[in-house]
Image (cartoon, rainbow, N blue to C red):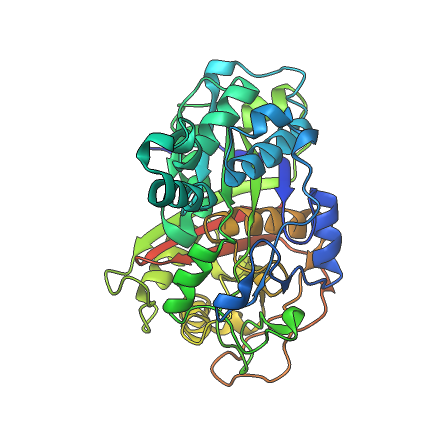
Length: 414
């Protein structure tokens, strides 16, 4: 496979805890606005973690007929909304692409868990004969990609990537390779997740993965790289990018956000849920992404960190950045926007890729909010509390998932 084919980002779409359009989300990020609050999607009295980063005021009828929406799980609704936004943003809604050369690549970690929960109640209380015929089509992870394909008429490959917290990032990476090797001219790529349910939150609580110290001050709960961090915050939403070969984008005079320049992936081969404390997998993934993008370490101005606000991830990720970037690690800026959005699991990497594209386009380094007590193990410039205006020549986004899945994407200014 040759990486001589340039791939450009020409459309963006977002449904997120800090805004349901790209403009709303980016305004919130620039201003350090937290999307984390007391959980409202279920009664959190039975779980230890009582806060979440929920999508607010989502109106699915803007994107699909409400009758059709009832046949979709929430993760699919979010994905379809973000994809339609991105498609419109790219200028392709009016035509300009061969449907058979348009692919869909969506990352999703868990699927339609609210549908699962409803199905379990029906099974145990009323028996299997009363299960909905739409239960399986709604809950399985590939249905987001399938519904996007149907709605937008994309007749190329339609795939779903499931690599836990790296799902959205890995979906972008596979999309990059598809365009480079000539299998598609355009790919609708990103991630989606909707797991703010008692079942999922309870499961993560049993692992001691979620923050529980800040239930009374939700906006303070996610504090990446801060000494007071105690776990991640469950988030939800979707983000989609329209990726095109440079030739295809230039031929239709498309507006371009940036170049999607590189991708790297690795496996820790260490533990199902804990990151390798030596950071070897993260180091390899970052190194591979830079090599794929043709970037030297000193070319990178911004790192959107995985930055989960967990005791184990943040020092490990700091170690990885130091190992790859050397002295330049102290010159670049690295922030975790999860401090505002929470952790969108399978959608996290896609949302953070959108943020990287906007950081490059607008010349802005997003902040890490809630940084109050420095952790000596996390001593890089994490853009504490307030964003900074400045030139971003190149940016990378890291996603480090359960199972030891590491994905990194790299973007360049054009």
